[in-house]
Length: 305
Ligand code: PMP
Image 1 (cartoon, rainbow, N blue to C red):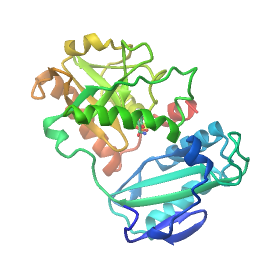
Image 2 (image 1 turned 120 degrees about the vertical axis):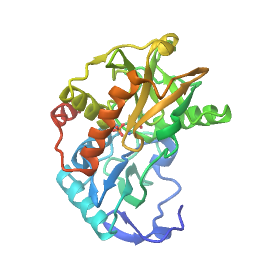
Image 3 (image 1 turned 90 degrees about the vertical axis):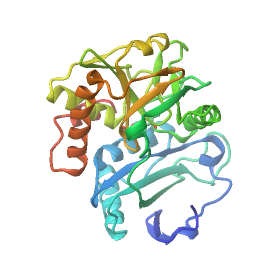
Image 4 (image 1 turned 180 degrees about the vertical axis):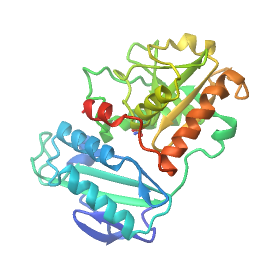
């Protein structure tokens, strides 16, 4: 990955991919004091870039990264970077972290870096669109909101995601279903939210133990525009088999069906699932690739920060 062609935006300059280096004593590396985003570019246009930049700014404030850029400037820099790279469909990874000025746990305020790297990319799980994602139960739960600022995308938390995914893959699953702190309810996936389908409506776990993802918010708004009922409710692990189906949502995942949770297989051809999932996927695709404007999720997304 580090030997690709192309440029990475690093602390205000475009540098060649292999030259994008910083010091091994960086605070962010030692203590996980880094914040990141994943942004999709569709047909040359970064999708929901402002919302991602707002979340990045919020995450940075949470972990004491004093970014020298405001949201407007972040948006402008990332747009300029995407344009300079002439991206068609791409993934962009902005990341901010605390630097190597002081290695004490408290670090030094104002010592921070920002990088923006991107590459051509157009989907996470191309096979899952047909077969559905298979999910194994992750061995590590999400922390409670009193234990970690869960709406911030802080790198440190992703150690849990990485261990959960590795454990699920070792058992032959695509990804992990991660439980809420009580160990009895569903929270989300390691990098996506989850929705369950029942009787023509949706049920999604509350965002108190999950990231309130931008795609989750978009799906809630699209569902309401399509008159699909959405219930935000706790989903017991023991109850997942009672649903007609499930799907995952996220910037990288987009909207993908879940084919299996543990030993339970959902019928992806079921009419009950398709009549809800089909229109939502079409509407999401229209949002990302078409010209349709958001049916009103931005206010909600801002409210959560
Ligand atoms: N949960 C977690 C833990 C994530 O990392 C992501 C990806 N950002 C999501 C959910 C989905 O969020 P979004 O729709 O904003 O990409």
